[in-house]
Amino acid sequence: MSEVSRARELVALHAKSIFDRGLTHGSSGNISSRLSDGSLVVTPTGSSMGFLDPARISHIGAEGRLLSGDAPTKEMPLHEAFYDTRHGTGAVVHLHSCHSTALSLLPDVDCENVLPPLTAYGVMLLGKVKLLPFFLPGDPMIGEAIRGLAGKRSAVLLANHGPVVAGKNLEAAINAMEELEATARLAFLVRGVAVNKLTDEQVGQIVDRFAVQWDD
Image (cartoon, rainbow, N blue to C red; front, side, top):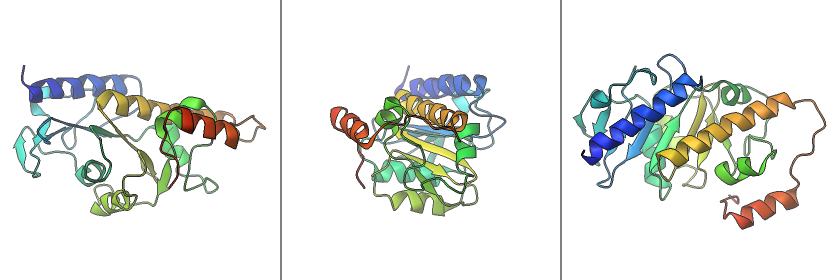
């Protein structure tokens, strides 16, 4: 099996898992994975993550030209922005997952770090998650906003839209996205309750121990 075919199969497999567990719905969300030659396999525009035909998943050349498969998601600018600016990015996942999106609607979140420090893995896998402004879906300005972070964040939350996570490979990006959604859900469960969040000292220990990119 060629690298392209294998990558397409993996994207379809993970996409179906995400869909079956309710982390995305309808034709929302998109995934991309980078190949060794710099080309990308990307979920097609208007496709449901639960019913992808691997052979129709877009294969985009390193120069941005469609090589095979259907036309890619209209959210290509946000994918390209992470690949271009964050060193070591091997996959990007964008969802409209419920709790993460709900968190982006709240008026009192910290835009520089949307997720409260509740668990060690939230800090380890995500670092600081920045809330970006609202843009129309597919707007190239989403990509420009991500480029403006200069590769310092692996995860962002698009206001009134949903999360985007980059990882070193597809599995890492999926795991981090699931951690983001789980932490957002946890944040809602304890909202308004006096809980023991991680202290600044504890966060610092996690950052140091696991080499988390934390400072801006």
